[in-house]
Image 1 (cartoon, rainbow, N blue to C red):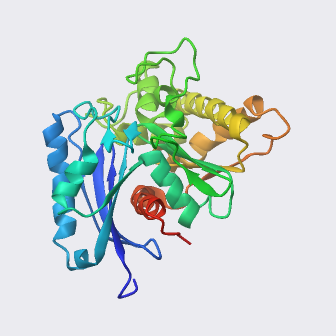
Image 2 (tube, rainbow, N blue to C red):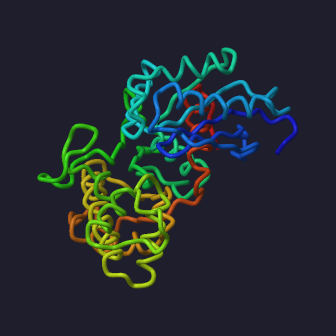
Length: 323
């Protein structure tokens, strides 16, 4: 890291954990990374307490003196106009004023809110697999499913910061109700939680006791391990998720004409278990001439994308060009 490089304090708020780091404004490097469990099953004050602990740890570092901007990436939906969040997987936060609360905790520094899918997109377009592409969809497939868009070479968050939120488009007209209020959402079929739920319903059981509670990525990891060993129920759960993703991606590509789709998040680490059925099914849904041959690839920034992206989106929103 350059000795005089400005830093952005970045926070990534998800249903399982809240992560934080100081991010180099010129090179996107991560420093002083830390995290806490989100405590999403508790009330809103408990979640705010976890966020406060992350920020306090960052503020205690000597490099905090070079921070003049805070980027917050959060599970959605978000409202960047009002500075509030209502994450589907954090029931204690509904219209929660995260921008004002973070501003208070950091002593009045400017705070920029970004949806987690848009943040991941900003990161991959700046430093990852979408770099150099003018039209891209970047997706987070983890506890939930989010996304963001780059159109005509620029990040496109939309009026309230939710553009590209592909996880809550319906891909199953008669599907299960979703916590968002809709039915048959992509998130309900393709998230890590959904993969585990489908495998369990089919009779699969993890080898390690205590992993039946589908509260996060650990169980999806167990399903992936079983799938690699050839368990047909585990393989079927990933095939179902891949098909749902293919339908959602094809619909989005048909609408806005994309060059590339980048998939990140914990479930994406399963690699070809997910991408294999996704790519195979994509040809069935993406049939028009201008969507055939769409490139689908894994994210390059792995689990740090949310933090790099929260910083990148904050820099972009405040008029700083990231290169």
